[in-house]
Image (cartoon, rainbow over all chains, first blue to last red; front, top):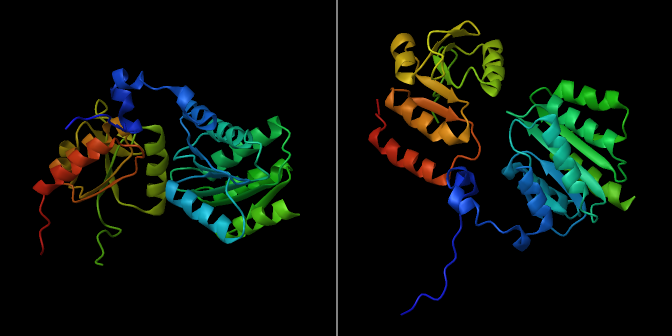
Length: 179
Length: 120
């Protein structure tokens, strides 16, 4: 018996202590959207739909994607922004999702625990103000500093659609595309 | 499911003096949590948010009798912090850290076998 091939996976979370394995990475073999995401340490998976997603927590991201499909839409990507996301990180994530030309609406769903709604809101406002946003943006915030975050969004005067619940956000996103 | 913690439970925070730890420590204090100490190696003997900071969890538990802890430590050291807490006699530990290497958590799971749950 001969071993003709082997497949190995490496825990991305442990690469920091394996420099010799880290250098084996070959970005030419990866989806360019995912390469860009990795450069900013963002957890992103490209999909084929048209509703761009920015969510915190892999579980919530999956639930949101399910809800989008349930409401008749299709997610363009999976993106878990992680905990404690700074305004700069949020802005980068935003830009990344919108680089996908297929995106016709953007949905941000944040259930903030370690994250803070005011930081998320600042990042969104920063991102939207520095680019010409051509797609509808639906934002649902809840959790830590939700009042501060909501105020930052409404005070910005930007055309951002606010949603209350996960279902409300998904419905508004799907509606925004069809209108 | 039985109640594990109540408003009197003494809580300590590992990583309390860091940016995220400080923010949440204040939130916990505002909420009324019985926060008794913080642990940050190297900052033992200082005070933060009016609570004593210790170098090790063992020191903190000996001085304050803390039974529960929450960990705000970066991924590279988080698993170690969990095991340190268990070793110091902490009964309930919450680690909020994302991205702890899988192998580290396997070690933690194995390590926890030393601490059999006592049924009272």
